[in-house]
Every structure is written in structure tokens, then in C-alpha cells.
Image (cartoon, rainbow, N blue to C red; front, side, top):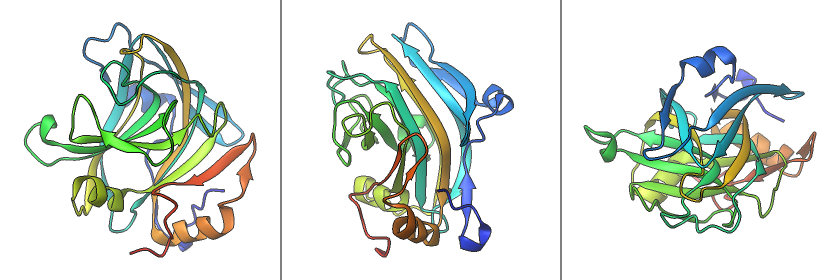
Length: 238
């Protein structure tokens, strides 16, 4: 269940996942990758989704967007990995590939290399809640929000307190974010992956509390589990 009524607090939907939106998003191919990720739009009973297919390649799509973390500090990502990348060392340069990931970015300098980011990943090998500096860019922290070790080939909705995680991982007390990006890559492992994204939005604390108490054990259609990130924190933590 997704709480979207303004009477329950603010919700900021990040992507609509339409053909028109996809054609207007900025796409960047991973440097040195042989192929681009193939992104396409589909739909099911829960609305539109983005499908990402990667074969010995990688690219991402993203946009600049101002997210007020004082009002909407929580992030929801509903996603599924149909074909993962098991058996690789995701913490190393040779294995730093993910079937699905989402970057949240804060501009902290004049160049992209100055930016700070959290890379929320759907891991094929690590446990939920694990994190480490990216092997290529230490100012981007990989954070396992979902894992095929727990949810393989099934939709899962995962939530994270982005404001608190930036404080924990970067020692930054942020008021806002500046951009987001979705990515699927297999250029290091030379493998193949298939993943899906749906219902990505930021939301307020009151929404989080309502979700926590009423939906934490509920499952959506097609065995979509609802999980809570940031180490199962209480919704009352300031």
C-alpha cells in the first residue's frame, strides 16, 4: 500500500515511468562499457514500471531534482531483480556491478567529482544494511537496500531515511538533495542482468509512521514484500 493522500503528509514522486519521460531523461553510458543498458517502459496492475536489461555494459538515466529532506526525508523504492549477478565481489572494481541501483546526489563542489552520493543497490551477494565506499569513487557510498538473498525475482518495496543516512555515511546534515539517477551495469563482470523499477518517491515522517504500523507485514500482489531500511529504525527516531 502506498500512502499518497496529502492529508497524511507530503509525497514527492520522482519518476512517472512513461515513454515521454524516458525520452527526456539524461542517459549516460558507463565509461569503457561495451554496450548501453536497454531501458523500456511496461505496466502491471500496480502501474507503470521501468525495465532495465544489461549485457556486458552499463548506463544510467537521471535528472536534477530538488528534494527537501526536512519535509520528505524518507525514500521508497519498489523494484525487482529477475536475473541477478551472483558470485561477484561487489565491493571490488572487477565486480562492482548491480542489476539495479539508485543514486541520490548532493552537489558539494564545482565538479561532479566533488559531489557526495548514496548508491542504493539491489545486491546479488551482500546482506541488506551493508555499506562501503565505492571502489571507483569513495565519495559515493554503496548501501544495500535490497538483496536477492532475501527477495529473488519478486517485487519488494524498500524504504530508507536518506537524511539520516547522509549524516551517518557522509557526516553531512543535509536540507536538500540535488539529483537522482537509476542505473544497471554489468561492464565489469561481463554478465547479464534484468531488473525493474516502480513507485519511487520521497515522503514525510507521518507517512513513514503509518506505513510502519499498518503495512510492515503486509504483502502486495505478486508476493511483493515490504521491508524497512536503515537497520529497522523506529519511526520515532529524530
